[in-house]
Length: 123
Image (cartoon, rainbow, N blue to C red; front, side):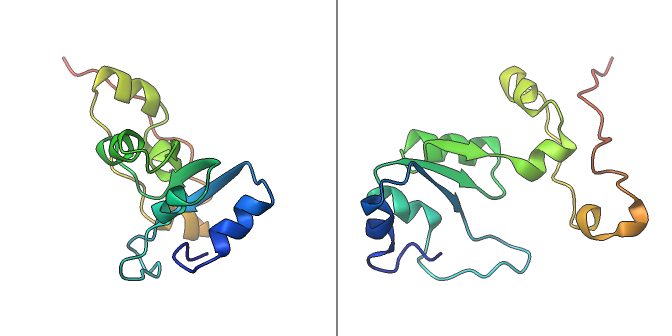
């Protein structure tokens, strides 16, 4: 849904929807529209906004700090960092997100989808 179209968010507000999950347009072939942001919903919608798409810690904190979102999801980043919350809490390094081959290459047989290691301390 393009949140910049008039009336769409107002219509959702009228049915007393509890939350909207807003997926910000991003790279890798996902259509991007100029001057359109998933966060535009927060200016009209009074319920909970859950933002999700390629967030890093700093961008997620910015979305929360500015009030653009109430919650932020970290789907792909959790795959390569199964202990992501602990890494954030302890300021440990974060592994880059998995590439799309993890999702599309059936020859991998699920490898790399759920077998990334937890943080390893280096001596």
